[in-house]
Amino acid sequence: MELLDGKLVSKQIKEELKIEVESLVAKLGVAPTLAIVLVGNVEASQIYVRNKLKAAKLTGINTNLVTLPDTITTEELLKVVNELNADEAIDGIIVQLPLPKQVDEAAVINAIQTEKDVDGFGISNKGRLFCGMDAVKSATPFGIMKLLEAYHIDLTGKSAVVVGRSNIVGKPMAMMLLQENATVTICHSRTKDLGSVTKTADVLVVAIGKAKFIKADMVKDGAVVVDVGMNRDESGLCGDVDFENVAPKCSYITPVPGGVGPLTIAMLLYNTVSAFKKRHA
Ligand SMILES: NC(=O)c1ccc[n+]([C@@H]2O[C@H](COP(=O)([O-])OP(=O)(O)OC[C@H]3O[C@@H](n4cnc5c(N)ncnc54)[C@H](OP(=O)(O)O)[C@@H]3O)[C@@H](O)[C@H]2O)c1
Image (cartoon, rainbow, N blue to C red; front, side, top):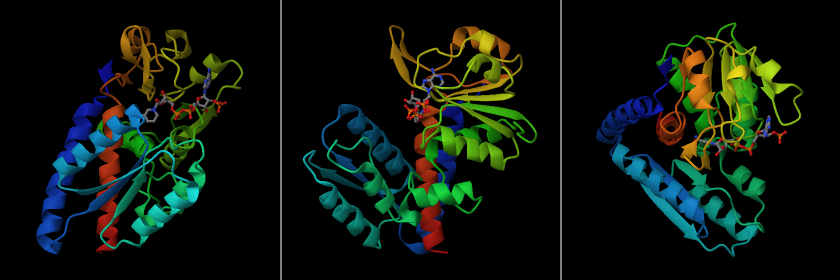
């Protein structure tokens, strides 16, 4: 069994981006700029945003943090997004989720200009991904694809099972695996006899948000297992996979923490630099 070291791969991606940003700045006299919209005072969101700002700065990407009160209306937030869309100095926009209950989250996300939607959450980028067109890819599944690529894991003809069908992880993950010629099955909370399906997987990606849910008897010998879950239990942070018992059966597996998590921010920065390059091409 070999660990898929997301921390290491994300470090490599960020180092490459830093060098690329330096050469872009030398050539164009301007750095890529990422705008982050943070609404309200949710602690987890503040931590995520702080980490994104820090990583962007270390990579040489300019940041523009817009903080707004949690009493904001959908219309007011749409106005902010439209101003950022129109701002020539901004290459990428992310609106940190979740948004307060009174705000129409889908309307806000879909208002972000397709080229600036560096989270790849909008329906335009999702549709483009679905159709196999050039799209900004959602950072978490995109990071997983980079991780598999870094370990030379060939997906062609492999049976890939994705557990979870969220719009930000499960569904785009399935599309990206399909694009790499895997034979893909998507499972969810209504899947019957989940274990019998996950056991067919050469590559198993789990994104459900349930601590240590995938047990050893649900995994095929020699499988590649990617654990997207981030849960807290009595032992601290853990994934959706019962790592201790599943790992010995795998050819490769991601740890939690240190697997998928670090790649998400790296790919967000990657998408921002790509958006900048397209605008200046
Ligand atoms: N590492 C990272 O950077 C990163 C990024 C994003 C998310 N995450 C983590 O990944 C996990 C999933 O996130 P998400 O946003 O995709 O979650 P989500 O929107 O809550 O979706 C969960 C999915 O899991 C399915 N599910 C729930 N219980 C199940 C069960 N018992 N058997 C089979 N499927 C089940 C649900 O099925 P239904 O559709 O039928 O309800 C749903 O499709 C969470 O732990 C989250 O914190 C990590």
